[in-house]
Amino acid sequence: VLCFIADAASAVREIARVLRPGDRLVLGVLGRWSVWAMSRRLRAWFGWKDRKALAAELKPIYQASDATAAEAALQAFKLGARADQVG
Image (cartoon, rainbow, N blue to C red; front, side, top):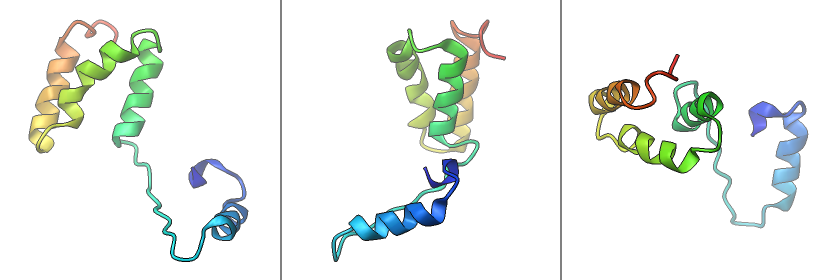
């Protein structure tokens, strides 16, 4: 969430303040093609009403064993029942 807040330095100071000695902080960077970003875009396209069905349809994409399998699953998703809604 640091990329979404105006004063990241203050946020990091607050994180350091509340962490107990020996605790760990794990940071990640959200990329344009991350699973999170993809799911947000797809939910924006399809809305939240069908989120459980959409999650089940997306599962083969984000659980693919490699990039080739993920691309094939994505193409299958685009050709599926929601193909008329994918831009």
